[in-house]
Amino acid sequence: MASTARQSPWRKPVERERERGEKREALLHAAVQFFNERGFHATSLDDVATSLNVTKPTIYHYFANKDEILFECVRLGLEGIRQAAETVERSGGSGLERLTALMRDYAVIMTKDFGMCVTRTADHELSTEGRAKFRALKLEIDQIVRRVVEVGMADGSIGQGNAKMITFTLTGALNWIARWYDPDGPSSPEEIADACVATLVNGIAPRANRKRKA
Amino acid sequence: MASTARQSPWRKPVERERERGEKREALLHAAVQFFNERGFHATSLDDVATSLNVTKPTIYHYFANKDEILFECVRLGLEGIRQAAETVERSGGSGLERLTALMRDYAVIMTKDFGMCVTRTADHELSTEGRAKFRALKLEIDQIVRRVVEVGMADGSIGQGNAKMITFTLTGALNWIARWYDPDGPSSPEEIADACVATLVNGIAPRANRKRKA
DNA sequence: TAAGTACTATACTCATGAGTATATAGATGT
DNA sequence: ACATCTATATACTCATGAGTATAGTACTTA
Image (cartoon, rainbow over all chains, first blue to last red; front, top):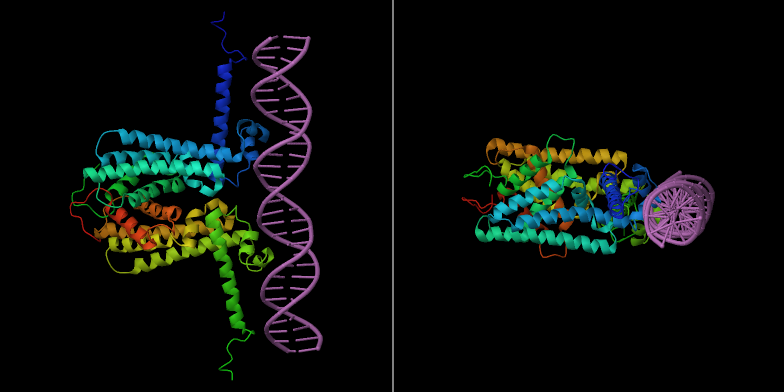
């Protein structure tokens, strides 16, 4: 009998916890889309709530305030980038190979909702505490990228130069994808990522010894 | 007698017009600094007015509304870029030489107040009309850059590729300068511009036939 | 010197939206 | 059955800041 009881309306505590998490996530997803489209200030929590058929106080059941929602969005985006960067850093291959892989993953994330939010959110939109954590996370990512650049310079796969400035230049081009990528456009995130990375790796001047794929 | 009359408190109409223009400009300069630092929404016109020892209604004597002020700021920034781009496009040299010069000027502008404002302002912060003009101006600049890229591909000074995507990648890296440039930092705008452009032109992979300066 | 114009201030209005006080319905545990 | 806890809604409060109505002052011109 119990084996055929398909779907009781009563949930076990574990399931209820999971449902709560899912609702929280749904709120974040709805919010990040508004933030990306209209900006943080121009998004009212009433709008977010209405889009999910609930009301504002419900949101306050899952989040302390609006700032926390924004912070969670950028945190998710940055966490994704950091994990990709860490994984790649630890992988094998030359510095250039690792950096190429890292940039590709980075670029793809920039076309996703939470990645976009990272680029579209300015420091001053976050609360004081959020801002500090935001900067710390961005710094961490920057340092991973810079380390990979330095590895490449050391093993000769990347030309010599100012690693800090190079890192900023590369991540800048990648970050900006979030400002022009159009999901309805002709190119997929992967195509865009590949094209961007190719330009950054090879530069624009023609190469005598041009190789397809690094 | 008139020749020694140093500074009459009475101005001629022309001078008064000029003074009006100067005041308008002073307001724009004060405003753009607040916008860059705190963001458009977080900047109150009371703050802007107070910083120049006047009150809010005075601002409305020079501008119709807050949106117009923001638009004028981004317009000035974009106008600067466009003029630099047009001048360079018409200059001599290979496509690559022109593009290099264009990117350098572009990068330097990105470290100035109005240039920064262009990058830091999102479409949705402008009024509907402002937004349309903003996009049109950005498109115009993009097309100049893209034409120069295509010239370079045609004359062989730039490697073959998707001109649109390359343009976005390059301008992205340049635009992002406005997000990390620190006037109190160790590098001057010119140094940053040169470093960025070098990375974008040469890429990061080492070049067999490396030349200093394109 | 009278009328007009340019510029600025004081003291408002008004909309918006974050956040809250309070109530309720249902599910859970004793 | 009763006390609780969770999730949600209704109906507020309250601060902020854009924009304005009104008035005064100083300079200009006839």
